[in-house]
Length: 51
Image 1 (cartoon, one colour):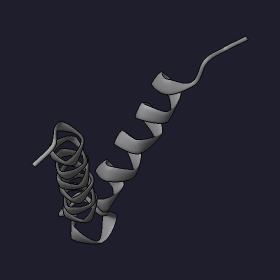
Image 2: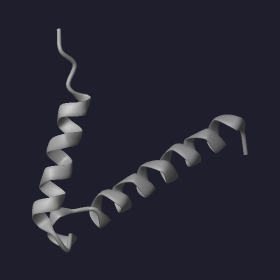
Image 3: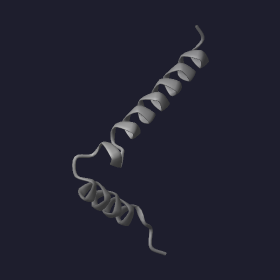
């Protein structure tokens, strides 16, 4: 397999892992939905860039 093909497989695997993690971390599966929402809010504030 070529290097390009290998890189493509790694990217596909990484996207699949990310989707699985997102599903695992959903609000519906969380034991404490309020804590989940608060964590998302805090993360959004941390990611916000003031200009």
